[in-house]
Image 1 (cartoon, rainbow, N blue to C red):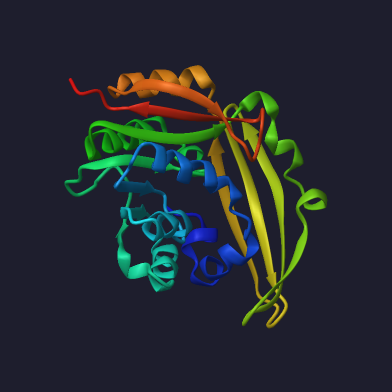
Image 2: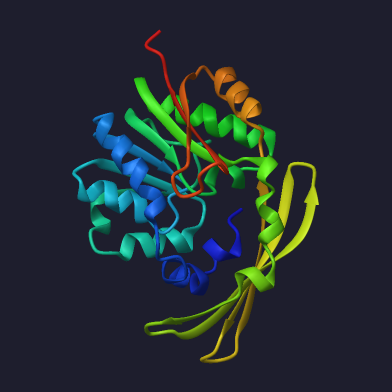
Length: 243
């Protein structure tokens, strides 16, 4: 199930204006270029920002996401017809043979149940050609990122063209072991509508992710630092071996 932030049509439509700086995607674009990835599977593609950047560079891209509203936003963007959009997840993909599979931003952490996480990695593995790569990221639990997820630190008023001012903030709800639940609040000044979206992220240790990748047959090439959150996040680059 997609969170309301991605699955509600009104919230999906403002997702990009509320988070316009996607400099975090530049390292992924450089990696795709370095790997000469001509066919890419973008798991959890959301509103299609990364998929469309890849398509702009000539890649053949499949974007998959469980949120129909986000897929609709992505498809309607300029160049949206150059990407193959699938509403669903990586546990039930059509036959594919891609050079690169990606899970950017919070995608990996949004897969909270161990079974679905294993099935997602299995789906990515099966979609890759032998020698193809998977890249995903997750925050380091030791840095306790959730401690800044509060209204005081996150409150914003954003003027959105065609929508008007939107107030937004984040409220921490619970920390239960590796699971962190938080609530996003949105207030639309144009009509006073208030929308709320609850999300849960799973904070996995580096060793846990490495073991999960190995269990699905991946070989780990490297674990990188995240340029946009240095020292706070792990970026895993793994590949499907040839035999």
